[in-house]
View 1 (cartoon, rainbow, N blue to C red):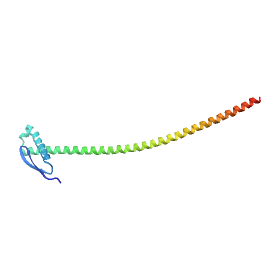
View 2 (view 1 turned 30 degrees about the vertical axis):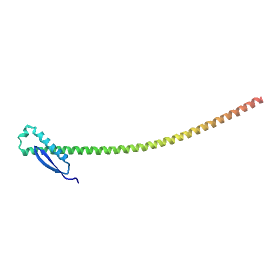
View 3 (view 1 turned 120 degrees about the horizontal axis):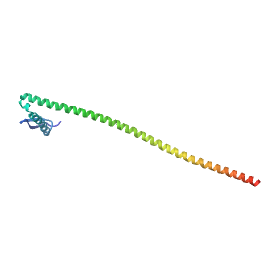
View 4 (view 1 turned 90 degrees about the vertical axis):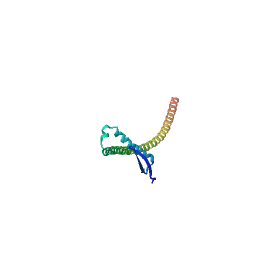
Length: 152
């Protein structure tokens, strides 16, 4: 735990010694905040005529109001952060899922390309074999025609 710190601060023209586990800079910041609140109220004409205990109560209520508004804002930001973290998690999950689908599709494309290449080779072989058969058939027919013509 941090060491206890003491600091002399001026609040509403009076010197106070504040102590706590925060640094002196923080304690001065707290005193400045209170002085700003007092200055805000001192600027209101009707406030000057109110008894001191009522003035203090109004300042305390105003500081409590600031606190609860800040606390509500923090809670809202925490909820927003939680929602953003969930959204980020969901997006990462979608990304991974899409990467897996992409890899699977790429594998399928490669397999289909290999199969297509194999089929094209088989087609070329069959076409060549067919052409050879046709040429052999033409030669045979040509030879038959020649022998028929020779016999005539």
